[in-house]
Amino acid sequence: MDQNSHNTRRIAKNTLMLYVRMLFMMFLGLFTSRIVLEALGENDYGIYDVVGGVVAMFSLISGSLTTAVTRFITFEMGKGESAQLNRVYSNAVVIQLILAVLIAVIAEPVGLWYIDNKMTIDPSRIPAARMVLHFSILAFMVNLMSVPQMASITAHEKMSAYAYIGILEGVLKFAVALAIANSSSDRLVLYAVLMALSVVIVRTVYSLYCRHHFSECRYSPGFDKGLFKEMSSFAGWNFIGIAASVIRDYGGTILINLFYGPDVNAARAIALQLNNAVQGFVKNFMTAVNPQITKLFAAGDITSMLALVRKSSKISYYLLLILVLPIIFNVDFLLNLWLKQVPEYSAVFVVLFLIFTLSECIANPMVTATLATGRIKINYIIGVLVMLNLPVSYICLKAGAAPESILVVAIILSQICLIARFLILKYLVKFPARDFLVKVYLNVIVVTIIAVIAPYVVYLNTDDDFKGFIIRSLVCVVSVGLTVLYVGLSRTERKELRDFITLRRK
Image (cartoon, rainbow, N blue to C red; front, top):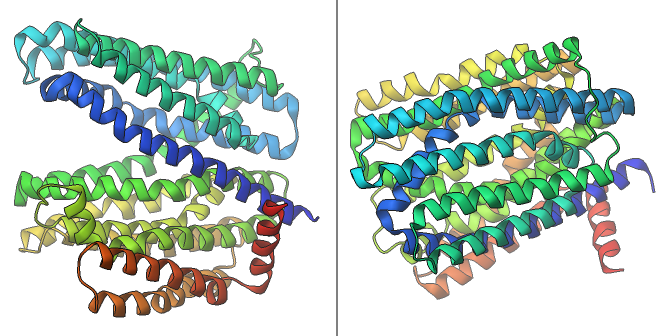
């Protein structure tokens, strides 16, 4: 078996493991959230959400550094330099510790000031809210400190460990929900304490696993200033892209509230929640693919890396399409099944969010390839383009456009960003943009057009009831599956798929 086939099968196996993890946690999470909401009540549940949100704001800062740590560990692993890999890990531990302490020092007084002066809350619940803040910060710090271990697991592509420990995390959260439901003490405080404890347990398991399985996951005293500067610079430039996405997403929420009010905000929030659930499936696939892209670049095998970028762009789109199409053609039925009262604009928001996610998923492997090069200063161009969402959307709404115009703007700018990513990669690693345009971009467009025809005909001739839902969903899945198999995949890719299925049966 050649190396490319081996890598393809490993990606497929890891993706399946991550899907099992996600499905388990998604279904268990539905029951957990229902029990927690009933046990705490709307008021205390809202307090926990708001106070936890104060801490979550700082994830914007930590997110860019997390990406940097993951990239550097994976890169050194691809080069096969174990000594340097240990230095990266040790420096990452120091950086995360400094960041955790810094954020705690800032978040604690800011959070307390917000609770005491700005938060709308029953005065009798202020002490409980303060306790929630303390333990939320503790949980955040523990999560932050575990980033090097998480990066090592991802870099080693041990997705089975990631999946099993994730299942443990879901079970612990469910146990916490049952515990507070049967407690006679202050349930809000108990919930905060037990959630922090569950985080400590899960991160301890991650740490023990890494120390036992990966030789580099042992802290070595010493601090590499040059490496620290390089990692910090990488994180700083990556911060621009993360900040731009936050401005696009949260700025859109503010604009809708400004021009159309909270009812339309509710519709957007519902659509976003459904979109995030669907998007998680593609994120799992990219979690399995990303280490391979970085390792191939580190090993100097640019040709194989670019081939994997092309292949994963196409496959991630098709994995998403087979989930998205049944939702689009059954959006009204699903919303009425899920919600007792469906806010206006919910359906159109769902459809546009899913189209936006389809547009973005094509670019995800290119983002990873750009990060792998370490030369991400040029990425400020993408950040600027993404930030244009806010002023352009404001102009549209000011001119009287419908609220969904915000997502139309986002889709158009997403396509412009895709072109920019072509050009950036072409500049960095001589990315064959024309080849990508024909074999990936035009390919997915043709597949989408063909795959939509049969579901659309069935949609026009079926009722919006359970029977119609089943028929439309089956037609969507079959249509996408057959079109991808015979139009979307090349002969080599079809052979790889048959080989993988045959291997799984043995």
